Length: 300
Length: 338
Image (cartoon, rainbow over all chains, first blue to last red):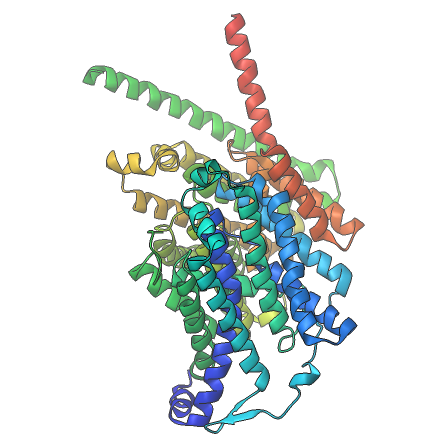
């Protein structure tokens, strides 16, 4: 425990800014993964235990697309759309066969795909650590805000994630498709009786969730190292985020992700060996005091 | 039903339970004798090693079935107790040098405390939440083992071997002694778990699985029953971990990694959760499968994943479930004829 480092950082603006931005980017990446998880759970009532694999695919797709085209925007697109397609195939081909079965079957199908996806990545890209490198457009001098160092790429990352949150929130609340999705979450039988193809909605939601995780992976690719199995710790963390925020709530995912991001970045100063533990401790406190999460409606 | 009739029915049930208890004990004894005679029939170290690994994983998987099959608690972090058993035992033997039985009991006590704390938080949660929060705790324990390098050796694991001083004439550094010791633990562990499953408490668990609301209306403290079985299952899983630690003479972070829990769930699926010995059958099949696949290809995950999909989506049942159904069908057919 190093409380001096923590209080020292909290009182200097430079350190405060640096730690907060690093907390924000952890939080924003987690948000993108967690929001897909929570969306899929809200509509399909299953937890996609292989969600981390989509994050991993997003990162690898982005790296390959960037190496081939040299365009950062195309790399992001490749990450998001490639994983969305995988999500659609995965849901229609496999997950849709275990709806209504017990959790055991759903976990097993996902477990099988975690094993398969990790090995597929190992086969195509090799087992060693890879790195995409910072795109040339962002290889510029960092910004100084109140004495703290902020790489411009971090701002882009935070902006993209916030935009995704906004589009998603408004889209679900205001558009026709959003209304259909919410109706399908509430009463799929009725939606289907009204002549709407619920299978398509399910596949679409899974693709959207997978695509968001893929976008997170693509955004993370320039600042993280890529390795098979990289998605698993992200999956666990984003699950903790959804537990804290409340399963099925998009606002909850945002707040939970930011809290976890900040806990991680400031916790690593004050409790270097117990950073992970802090996260779990926070989850346990929320679970015990509010079992349905901060913004969850139903009781878990 | 009058009180007298109820009393009679209860007495019949008790007598029944007593006779099955003797039968189970006899089967266990016979199984142990057969296993103990195996070294006399074969000198294959590979086969004996295989049985030791079956004992370690079999205890772990069967204890998971107490949660999954009997209580309906799909734990996805049960492997943490396997890892805790291995590390607890290994660390006690390395750092304190106490005799094996004391380290054994002390490890059980440590696991009991940790399982009670984790269980108290988890068993309140429903289905998927329970599955994931147990998984999250498993990852917490795994990452603690990795980051606490000075105590656990980090990603290198507990190296330098675990001292195995002889006790009561048993020398666990002797391969044959270790084999017999593992078999004895397996048989005793299975017998105890069978007793739990067949006891009134075991039937309470089945009732909770089928309808927890009804169980609580009958006056059963569902939370306490779930917590009790969670802790008991953790203890048996940790015995599996201890056998593993003795076998490899060390403990590695992989023992506490989530894939162990995934394998445990798959073993239960493979063998089937409707029969008591289903997970044992699943263990034998998975270990044979693992050994064969690792020899043939480095992409072991793809093959295993496809096999899991085949069982989960294709068959939807474990092997022992099919056997069980077949037996029931034959019995019913025979009854109809007679």
